[in-house]
Length: 84
Image (cartoon, rainbow, N blue to C red; front, top):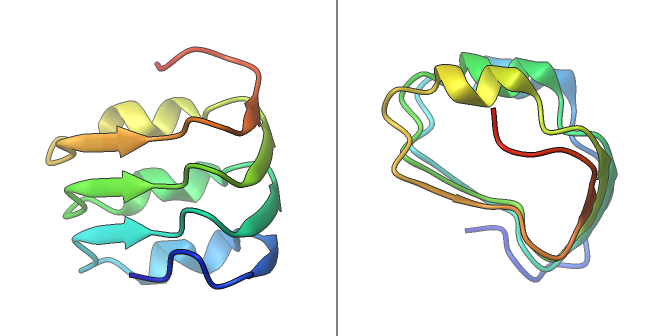
């Protein structure tokens, strides 16, 4: 759990290297930019929490490919689209 650590910057496209990740918890930081489309390669992920950051742009459609995803928290960002 990497929440509430004052991280700044963007989410890297290299997130795809974390293929065995089951939980991605980065809430309450200062992450900005868009959510990379490569997030859709995290096929084992069950929970994603990117809430309370400064993320913007569209929610990538690749999130819809995550068949094991049980919970997704994106509130309190500046995202401009609906879930795919």
